[in-house]
Amino acid sequence: MQHSEEHPLSGGNVSDGVVRVGDTVRRPAGPWTPAVHALLAHLHEVGFRAAPRPLGIDDQGREVLTFMPGQVVWPDRFSLLEPAERLARVARLIRDFHDAVRDFTPPPDACWQVLMPADESDIIAHHDLAPWNLVAGDGDQWAFIDWDTAAPGSRLWDVAYALHGFVPLSADPDWQRTDAEDRLRVFADAYGLDETERRRLVPLLGRRTRAMHDFLRDQAGRGAQPWATLWAEGHGDTWRSDTDYIEQRQERWARALLDG
Image (cartoon, rainbow, N blue to C red):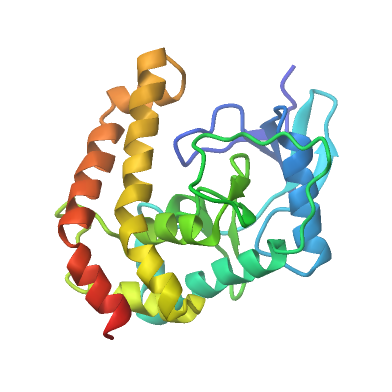
């Protein structure tokens, strides 16, 4: 029976069953929930506040998290990432998360929701650091939400994905940026990438985007939801077009990152 104070929350591509109750969010739990809660608890213990705090499981078997007040950036509030200093703020927020998670030791029985294996693993990565998961609140209250797909990965895998969404590196004429190279460099500088990391990042930009296309294609072939629906709605075409756009301009990204 639905609680009278429950308010469905929308946004993102996978929000079925997500509701707000007072200052909390209730979400369907899964086998990965205990590991994700251990991660979120660790982040708060070491002082990282740009993520929900886990509050356990309710009497309906749903995970309970603190509600992060503010506005989701994508798609209608992307202007919140202007000027470039606000983009730099996002990069620093991601670096703060990566620094905070560095000393996290997962539970011995940790079960993660691994949608696509990363090339390597040096942290527990978020895997969906994007404007559709960034809540911009008042003042310094910016936070990333939707940690369900946190899993072993790498800092650069997370960064490559974040650059696609936050620059953005998009083939869509409505979203293409004439200052894409400048924004790429602003992000890399604010995150603190060294020269070796920048060289490794350049080919990852296209590979990370292509991985999303291939994941949706494979899941749609199996009829797995909600991915099959997203594929049918054209999300796969978007990821493929963005991949082509990124790969065709790889030399531009390299110059922006290495010669700036």
